[in-house]
Image (tube, rainbow over all chains, first blue to last red; front, side, top):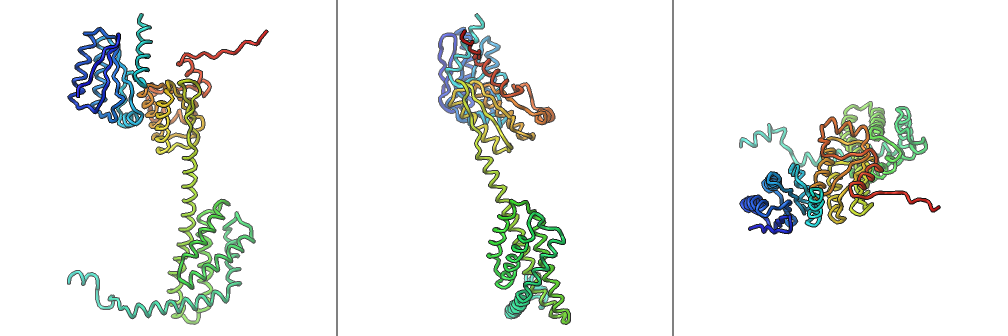
Length: 120
Length: 304
């Protein structure tokens, strides 16, 4: 299932709406990394609210997305991790180090906006 | 054929049902005689037993009168158990006794000790009674010993079970003293932890906190562990996991009130302190949280 990537001002928003296969995740990574420069975005938000399972591949891919996007000159925030998913992730040692996280989309946008302000 | 040879190793081992029946009848007969003897000498044996109890300094938590009263009931239940060869009544009594004496600090070794003393006192009286007839003494002891051992076993197990039940109850009580997740300001939660944390409670705490973060939309959480006396490696790792899981939900965690012992533990097990935001006390933690949230607390100037 394709993940839609929406452009909202200086931010790209990718909302994951269903369980993703490994191939879908790779497509998402490719799409985000290409579009962040095409749209000259400063921030990327990946919304995982509807993911109720986060395996090691998914969490590694999210981390890779964040690091690659940093190299492309933008900031990534992962938003909407469910409490149960968070607990399972830390128990598996998947802690998304060096990746910003926020409670939900609204928080993620607020976080990025304060970042952009400090850039100005 | 081969299997049979293993089981019945020679004709004298084969069990003859009639012989077995006769034997159990003989045992009952002997037990009846034994019970009659114990009933007859009740006063004297009981006193001897109480004497032995105070000599060996058991049950020091109880007064002499109490010991005597309990001894009488134990003696009677003991004889009854021998007579009826049923242990339910004794078991119930042992449980009841345990309920009464455990809160007074009576130890397991004392309870087992007094039952074994009674067993010895009674055995001695049997030796005295049947010393002329060694064969008879032997048969009486054959009947007495298994029953007496079973009684001792029943009482000891009853006591230990009661004890474990008490411990379980207390553990449940601790668990139910739920740890509240409190909101002190908009988007600021406090989680005060008091008492012993075992892995189960740690997990429960984490789940509660994560749910609290979501429902209160918290950005900062202060976990206060002033009331936690000790922490082992497992629990410390749980704490670190709680911090990381909260971060995945976008909340910053500040841990306050680490005692020197806990600080030592965390350093010894090599917890990555870079991930932990710690402040000395709860007040400092709340102040830092307010700074993170952009609050500023100022005193109201007195009206001139």
